[in-house]
Image 1 (cartoon, rainbow, N blue to C red):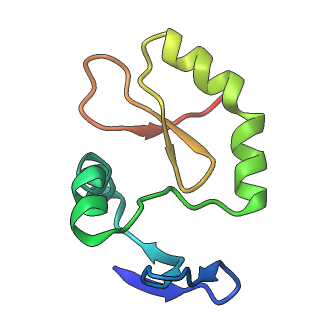
Image 2: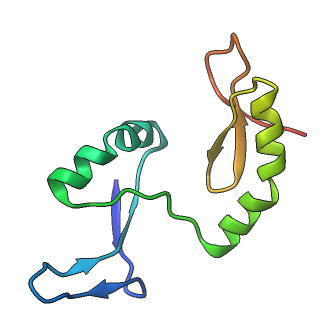
Amino acid sequence: CDIHTAEDLSYRELPGKPPTRSIIITINPVAWGTIVRRAALIRRELMWVVRDYLTKAGLEARQQQQGLFTQLKSQGMNPAWRNAAEIWVKPQGQERYTLYQA
């Protein structure tokens, strides 16, 4: 995976505590599920907080599609977000996710 320090993200020092810094790590999508499942352990052991990082544009695009995402979920299509704001689905009986085409 690639690790990029985001210079414009927060960096702070509090008295009596170690300095904190935000970094952005690009992770293979296959590994993302494992990292999310182990987020509590990662936080406890490494003092890292795992978050899905989105740009402002990516967040807005995702918010615009939230209604469709919810509808697909209620239809049993098992939607998942990928590549920021793409909706991928895995209907019952299928082994792999595919990009949702409206």
